Every structure is written in structure tokens, then in C-alpha cells.
Image 1 (cartoon, rainbow, N blue to C red):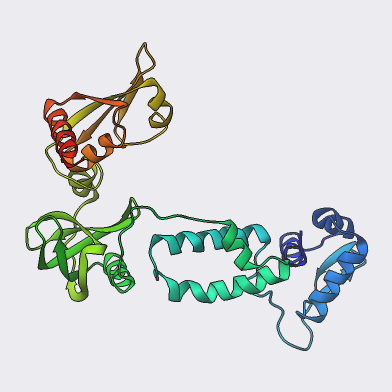
Image 2 (cartoon, rainbow, N blue to C red):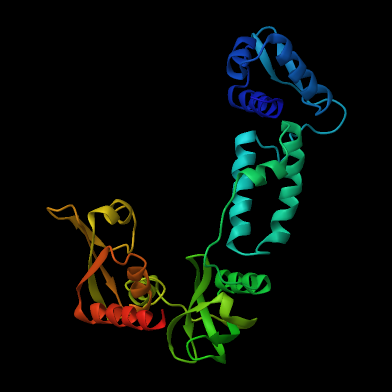
Length: 321
């Protein structure tokens, strides 16, 4: 326990127990009498803490504040474990998208640098030792994230210029954002689309411009959102659901059996230790790509339409090789 932790623990004990014997402090802080006296002198001399010895009660307590500034512990002191956790969170935030929350996080980071220096650990060394790698992430404009997040929380509509990559066209849309989703290294906003009058999911990386309006967002219930966006597979939602059944070889099962492909998936091992996985989907595009990652260690049992889709993709791929 470093000095910062000890100072907060002394303050906590005095507030919780009113009178604290010396032996309790030494046991709780795990320090010598001399170290405790130095901490006490620091609290009294530097922070103006009105801590006094009560002979009759047999312990230390807070007395009446004397002259000088009011006693108050600094509001942003962390122990080493908390500092490491916060810096790891900062690394994770950075990995979610360049520039996201940078303005909000940097003041905290400045304080973290100071505290890390007090612990004798360089923040640069920490960042070299903790890595979060982003794979298959598309660029998300930082200036688009904050207005989308603000509209989601404040329940306002958005005017967006959105590029549809499948049709290679850009449309102006008014949407009522419902929630932000971070999926497979990319950000999406699930929203009610006023152009199509239905629930849609829009990738932030496909947005060319974003403007918050003064109009209140149309509210969509969590149940309806789930029925459209969460019942299918991956990012492709839909109300018309089919169930896929895949079989993975015994060797590949060692990895796939530890994965979650869908919240409603069903799975089992057969007598030959092959792994069967059954889950719902509404659009074959994403699930087909995931199946192809495991070729030739996977078989599509059903439905036949999905098996035909994967077969066609394999044939098309062979023609290109």
C-alpha cells in the first residue's frame, strides 16, 4: 500500500469509526509506527486535517478544524491497480476509433501521467506492454461519433448523408437513433429510418455527414428492435428467420465450441466428437463468410438454400484462383 492509499484509508477509518486506536491503524495499514506518524504529519501539515489524539477514548479522532484552509483530500487519487485499469480502458477507447472521446479523456490522462510518475512507472512503458489490435476495422470519422452518441442519449433525430456500398449510392436520410452498437471492430447506429419507414442499422464509417435536429426521435421499443435486429445473424437483421445447422470436424471443434455465434444458438457433440452448431439467421451474407473461414473443416447440414449459397461462393472463388 503506497502513501496515497494509506492517506485515504486513514481518512476512511476515522469517518467510519469516529475513534481509532493506534493498533488498528498499524494493522490496517500494515506499516510501522514511524511510517504512520509521517502519514499523520502529512495529513495535519499539508492537508490541514484536524486529527487529534483522545486520551480518554484511547484513539485518534477528528477534532474541531482550526485556522487555515478547510481539510479535504484531493478528489482524484488512485492506487496503482486503479491506474492500470483506467489506462487499459483508455487503450480500449483508443482502439474503438481514432479520436473518440479524446477531448474528454486527455485531462484524465494528464493526471494519470503524474500519478504513474509517483509510482515510478512510465505511462509510455505501460502503453508498450498493453496492446489492443484492431482487425477488419473501417475508418469512422471522429466528428461523427459524438453527434450520433449525443442524439442517441438526448433522443433527437439525425440528418445523415449515408453511402450504401452495395449499390454504390449516397442518400440523405432522416433517422431516429435508438442505440449505438460496436460490432466486429466497427460502430453502427440502430435507428428508425424515416425514408424507408422501418428499422435499419447504419454504419458510422459509411456516413459522409451528420447533423442533429431539434425534432424528437421516434421511440422504438426494445422488444421491436430485438425482433428485427437481434433475431438474425450478425449485423444483418430481419423478421424472416431460418435456422442454420453446421457440423465442424473434431479438430476444429476445439476452437468453435468455445465461441458464441448467436445468443440463441444450440450446440452438441456427436458420437465422433464432431461439433454441431444450430442458430438463426435472416440474411446469408455474413453467415456465409463465417462458414468459409472454416472450410474444409465445416459442413452445412441445413437449410439447403444456405448450402447452395456457400457452394456457389466456393465455385466462384475457384474460378478466380
